[in-house]
Image (cartoon, rainbow, N blue to C red; front, side):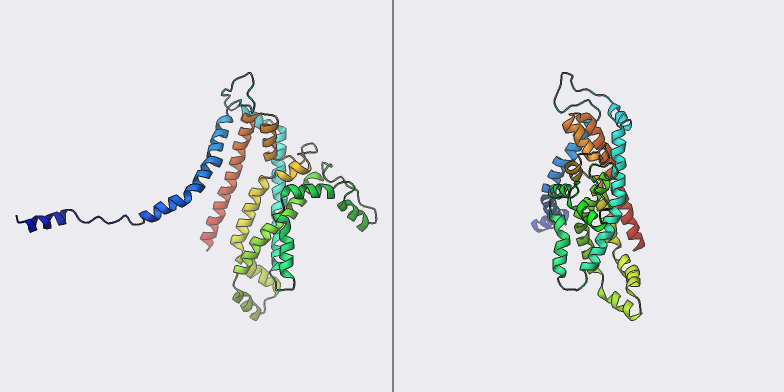
Length: 314
């Protein structure tokens, strides 16, 4: 075979290699996501793995004379028999059942107000949003003074009712402590949801409202048939995010009431913190944290279910 023929056969047998399509993009994507993945592993996956291991042990924060050993499901059995845990869980659910709908509805109302083209509307948006950017510790300290027996809230109540109402011990009364924490939480967090609703309102095309006005629809009919359906995805995000934040309730309770009086404002996260870092029972607190992750996971699954429903409707 001639030299040219051999070269031709080799050319057919070894076709030119083509570059892997998307290989460069995949490498770039992994490099860009690497910092987030490393932080996710270090601060979420590794701690949860340790908590899962400690949950089945008698681990203490400061090692004592007894060595750490495997105790099986004893921590979980103690949790199920612990009345403080059940009271904390009940407080969490009560807080979520009140705060989530009230805060979301109030945020929608404020978003509708600041979405209108009126004078000083930028100033009103800033005023409503200021509590959100204020640290919860500062907010809780200020409201602790305002809700004290001789605070501003009781003074206003006495003035408005001509002395027939109050003074009330808002954060020292078993019946009023949790509602007081709810009120402070709604006041501090409503600005965040308002901004989200405002963004959702501005995404609704103005042509829909113009067509509705030409058909003679009133403001109430426009709200129910244009605004509310247009904000469906925003509703889902706000409700799910607010619910998750409600179950993470800690700072305002720690600052205002320390879980009291008589565990009336105790929450799972604060009870977990108290057991692990103040009572040094790391194994017991780890078992509670595993249960708490299960609650958050259930909420996330509910979120996926709601989003799937949205795609099927669309």
